[in-house]
Structure formats: C-alpha cells, structure tokens
Image 1 (spheres, rainbow, N blue to C red):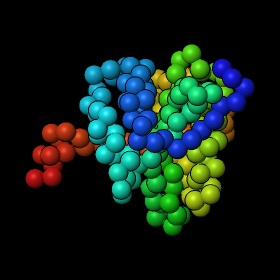
Image 2 (image 1 turned 180 degrees about the vertical axis):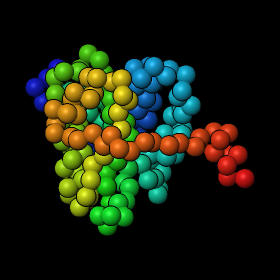
Image 3 (image 1 turned 30 degrees about the vertical axis):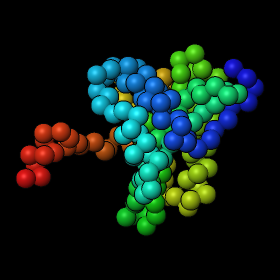
Image 4 (image 1 turned 90 degrees about the vertical axis):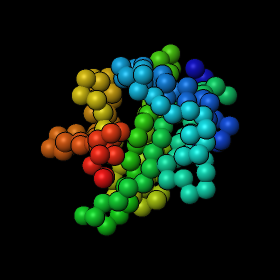
Length: 160
C-alpha cells in the first residue's frame, strides 16, 4: 500500500468496481447469494439524475481498494439531516492499514460540511473486527433500537 490513501466521489465508470466490492462484501457477510443487483442497476440508482444514494471510492494510488455507499436521512428530533452509511468495504489485503478510517473520516467531514446532526450505520452483531473498529473511533452502539424490515413478498403483501 502506498503512503497516501485517497477518497473520491464514485463515477459512472466505477459501476463495475462497485459491483465487485458489493459481491465481496456479501461473501464476507456470509450472504453470497443475496446480491441481486447488476452494473445497470448501480448506474441507475447511484448516478442518474435525482439519485438519492451516493458512493465514494477509496484508492491506493490508482488502485481501488474499497468503497462506501451513503445517503441522507432526516431526524425529526434534531430537525436536521443525517448521513447514513449503508455499506463500507475495504479489500482484505488492504485492511488494517488505515483505509477504513480514511473512509469514515471523509464521511464524517461530509456530514459536518452538510450540517448533518448525525452520522449513523449498522453493523452485524457477529462482526467483531468492525465493532472493535467503530468502538475505537468513539462511536456509540445504539443497543435500544431494533431494526425491522419489510422486503420481497412481505413488502408486496403488506402494501396490498
């Protein structure tokens, strides 16, 4: 790894790289068959006019070594937007060298510059390396919240 890790906004030409990282993340999270997206869907949802989600690419020199996808949500209690980190991934051979911290600092600064009241994300309860990393940053687990989800047939059936 070079001495300088850089972050830049993702571009449409990064769609294939983003899909690659998404697939690697799914394997790491023990859900290799859960990825249903493709390059076109990434182009349509991250780079079309009116896209509500955004991505950054983490580079070591010219080599992409990680990515993050984020979007803005809203806190009614704060009366401010928040930055929500959907996914963060660093390639296994680049872990432990500061790339994840650079990504998180970049997003924290983006939240501050956009007057966000919060920077939030979720982590799988078994992912001890990620939990330790987030704890080392001073992030606080919000254990009182339980995530609920409607997806697939449950979402369709409920909406009827």
